[in-house]
Image (cartoon, rainbow, N blue to C red):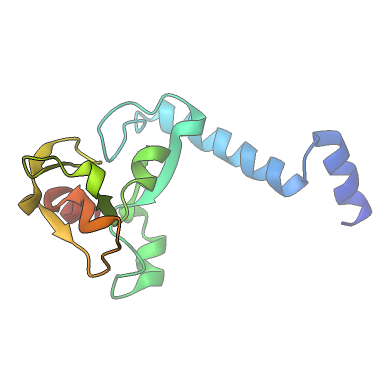
Length: 143
């Protein structure tokens, strides 16, 4: 760390890059609130705190035909709760989450649906039946 960065870090109480990223997120959150875009793309509820704010891609960019273009496409960007965004990726549902009547809870829309409404993964572990966390409808929305 050079002398200027050490001085900045001392004045800010954290590395300059960390402080700069924090400031940018504060500015972004303020603008999101002012523009009325503080509604979660996934659950439709208000994003109330800066800690909840997450930027996400509506369509998964790594699986796209042109990942770089899809990554930077602003029409492919939405705001969501961090917990909604982090829970949106493909995952398996453990045995404990499959009810006795054969229904599953979707982690995105929170609906209780028959297990037939959930996709299966190829990788099935000993503690999983290979079902995804999101129902087929929510998976289509997330791309």
